[in-house]
Amino acid sequence: MQFQAIIFDLDGVICFTDEYHYRAWKAMADGMGIPFDRTINNRLRGVSRMDSLEIILEKYDGPALSDAQKAALAQQKNDLYRESLKEMSTADLSDEVRETLDALRAMGLKLAIGSSSKNTPFILGQIGLKDFFDAVSDGNNITRSKPDPEVFVKAAQMLGVAPADCLVVEDAVSGAQAGHAGGMKVACLGDAALNGAGDWNMKSIRELTDIVR
Image (cartoon, rainbow, N blue to C red; front, side, top):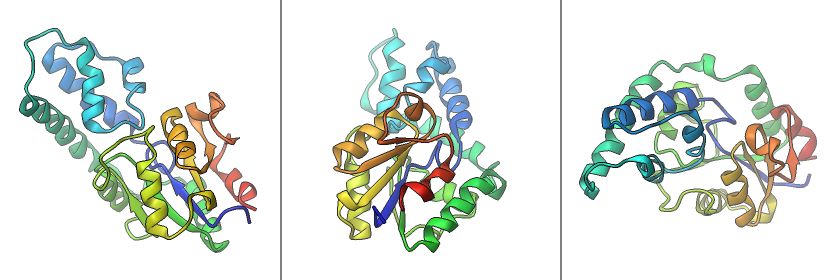
């Protein structure tokens, strides 16, 4: 096989929490009188919470905000988001994803998560994958968000696998850029695939089993 390990982004690849993110950021922005729509929301894909806040604040025209005020706004958003995530369940893990993960595991590949989200452990628990992955690198152990490669490089280190032997699976262009910057090949879904950002641009996650052979 071409690879020893596969590192998956979480949101948009393993499960879909975009709508939950959108609603939470929208509520926070509305409370501040900041224009926010799905076009702006799309810029937040694969971006850390604080960096996402800075993007939203580009349209803020009120008094200057202190770091403490910004932290409070980010916390407000996260509280709203986490409350909505309680609605998630194993039903949010599609048969397509579950069967693909099981097939890749059966092929002897190491599997990891590489996500900017600090809520990764909670989400994995909600969808029934709490202890499934060999490593989880997420917003709790990184200081730089994608397109910086840190989250994927750390995942590879956790697995004990060289970056060149890892395949990253992403749905965001910034995530694909992060994978390439970390010296890894990238297979893309969603927006990233439509933009031709990957070494492979897939229509279905099931294509992974052919890619890794």
